[in-house]
Length: 415
Image (cartoon, rainbow, N blue to C red; front, top):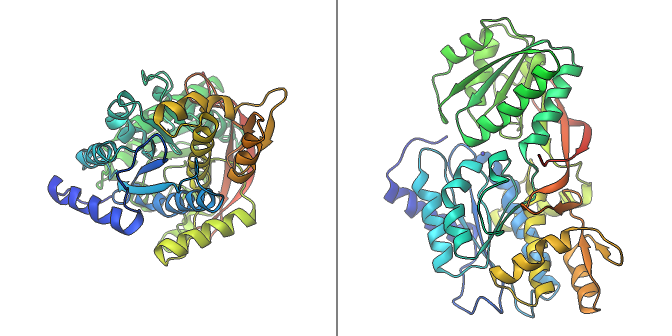
């Protein structure tokens, strides 16, 4: 959610190396009594800019769980492997195969909806729970996963609706969408287009292959109709598209970004071009205390400074709610986790609402039923594993190439 094409053998080797750097080795103990978590995130490729907050969220959650006594009296283990990008589809598949061979109970990831589609059948048919913190493709809602797939990020039915309404509120009546030809790009474009056209705007959608580097012709097509606004539904192809739009004289203040490319551009030569641009990112505003914890966790495991927080909270929630489900089921297997995930995500009469692992375990040990409300919001999984109530933040860029939250919109992400 770009790197040059590489041989699959080399990519798989880098996966193993990355696991040594970022993840703990996984012991061969019985899965039912010890929660073993495998993560599949973009350590390389066009979504690798998302990795820092994801790594932070994963490690912070596991550290908090283990500090509270672990799950079923045992420490939780974490093994982090690569999903790469569309240039290297075999990498995510190899990572899923390795995790399953190591008998993990819960897989967090993949970050990309397209990469999830490569591995979801393998994972869920093995009766292992998969929770993604950043899959947003609407097509995953009805996937035949046996009830083992969940996500803490809302479907793009919500992000598309919120961003399209923002564009309409800003006065645009002619919109060009430059989209990556992937499950993510196609799904989000469809919702944007539907809502914009319902609002009487004319829409032109121009698609291109993932990791495309020659973007001039696509930009020319997008600008041919002299649009009021241009939306980039991409990953880091935005770093080619933005300077191309600037060179063509299109106003940066009329550019709209999405979660796949809403990052800090302050070090780019075109940073000032983004002044006034807006972006949508799933999730609500994070409090400073939680941000500080993510920063500390990232520093602890990488010795680097965390500057972006996108999806850090949703991966954190995925780990915490998965662990609480194992405690509630008194069974750390995938089947056990699945049996309790929906129940502990939903509010209800007589339930205790908890916001962290330690309080959740305390309530469960006292014989109470719990409802976990996380950093992403209330979650409230439906029968498809989608969060039924979720937040989308609208952000505004400054001349420094950085962005700040303007408002948060709460809405339903289901059809």
